[in-house]
Figure 1 (spheres, rainbow, N blue to C red):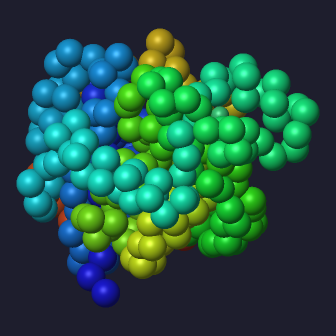
Figure 2 (tube, rainbow, N blue to C red):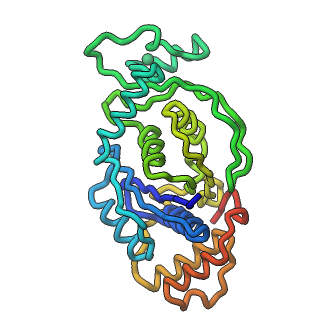
Length: 288
Ligand SMILES: [Zn+2]
């Protein structure tokens, strides 16, 4: 099986040290496994997109020497594909229209343990609704960094939002399948979404088995996630900065780079990182 991985940033802001860590780690893991590494732009949520952010992200990746092995795809150009999969879920009674607001749902959840109100009381035609997929059992799996993850029962969750936007879950699951991604290396903030994504893979009868590796987040000393306001400054794309940033990132990724690595060409810095790479050595959390 040929390794296929991806880095999938949302253009909600420029890349910062945390997103560079994810990009570099997913790249090293792909290349250490003689694999293919793809870049995908997750731009499905127009209100959150920052003008110019995609361009800044792509320029930063280029400056860092992180080149997608295949043409970059953008989720905003794949809405028909997501719609086909959504239609298939509805046609197979695996998803249903739901008009509940978050507060209505919360109120109903408090009354009944497992709400399927709109499944049993379909909203009238013409009502603005989202679409909720029927949840189910998600098996245990072993995360390559975070370790064993327990099986869980996933509640029904939104795949089309009431405002008409496709939910992240649907787009990610469909894209990973169609792009034949079999190794998902991403930030630990997405670990809790994995069970939902596995359930959705099952509902869509996707067969591609995936390995998951959820990378440590760079946390502040108090254990809180770094916010964009605190340390998460956009990365500089000057060559000297990139050399320094790469060797720093290697250090965070438990690679113990020698002090003089910084004086090498970027391509040789990566070559060293790929040779040393060991996913199993990564810490589960990172404090700065
Ligand atoms: Zn509902």
